[in-house]
Image (cartoon, rainbow, N blue to C red; front, side):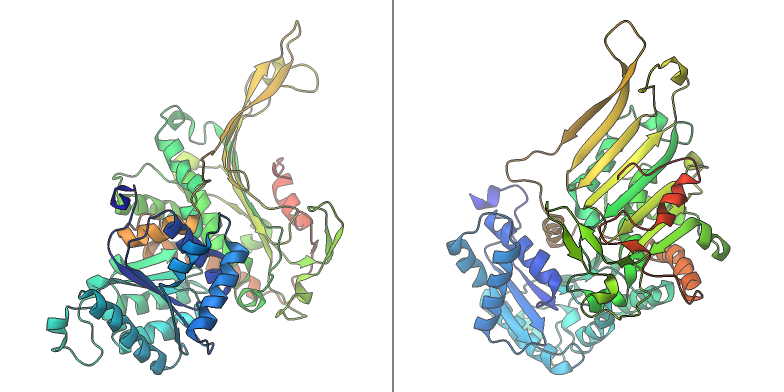
Length: 518
């Protein structure tokens, strides 16, 4: 029976998606929810309510979702399953900054409660630009939507629109969480006014990726690596998140954020902590989040005078792409839709970071991420120190440093390069890769599928906590403040389709090292 399916959610719920007509909902949320439905992981009773400004009818909204699912769903599509799924989707028109839409939403949610004669847990998903967060939170509070629900027999004693119990509500909020340390602090203060920490799910979808989760399983589940996971054996670490696409339809959003705040503050630092964090004292959600937060707090903040030598920023100009086998002409960032023709927003950043954790004393972490790079790839490379017996090698292939690579995108797996003597009479060494890739019949679960299920279960392990967010912003804000003092960064400074600015190569080359992923 369905109830015996591992991971199946059994409790009814209603998910309200604010900004339902946006890019995130089309590309990620609806495909993820539909695939969970196809896998029979959702309960029999669930409802999805889209909230947006567009004057859609119910049929308009369902047509919009069908176009999105046919474009972005990467699994087998079933008309009968989609017909059943779309029957659970509803639309509520409303302006984020006006109360009426929220008041209308109260009536719609009450219909679900009355139909099931119980309080249906409510998940509010803020799939909007960060600028909309404060006003949405304001009206969730003022209309008492944030209070959840009480049984009908008790509801009459509440003020009009009041719900009564916060145990029935959760709020999901997308990164970036604020624009700087001060903004993030104010956002967290506002969240804390209306929701308990146990109700807040701050989403960084990289934490939901199977390959990222497996880094901790690999580290702490295999004792052979623990003795060498320190500065005695590791020379340096490289982390790359490369995107071959530009900003596409997200020009308005990206202009107000930039790569440093969009990617470095969240994804890059989360991947770094996956390597540096100590083994959690407890293997529950709070134990893992404690360890992750401690690791971020130990990253050495960059002083203003160090920004020029430790940080590189870039913006892509026009260029060419050969990834599809054809020579495609690519626009510069300043020519993209909804982007200022004189924009100084960065589309690339590289950082050289250190941590105060004694195990990693003196070990540099080279991080980089950017748009319109040569190809899409996300990897973490842990480069060990060169063997002492390197001089025994002869010929072009001598004994070299071992490298442990965690491949996250597009290939997902782990590879360890070892040195081995080539068969024959000479002492000639070859580098032998030992690797595995994830192979499952249905492919790996999408990150958003995992995160959505965890919200429904109430598991906060893969969601960032307020002290974790503030620690990351403390580091990033120092960099962005320094950049604000520089009037002309010299953009554009790398051609679309390349590996970024020349300065990013020099950042690692001046230390006698080179980027592995090229």
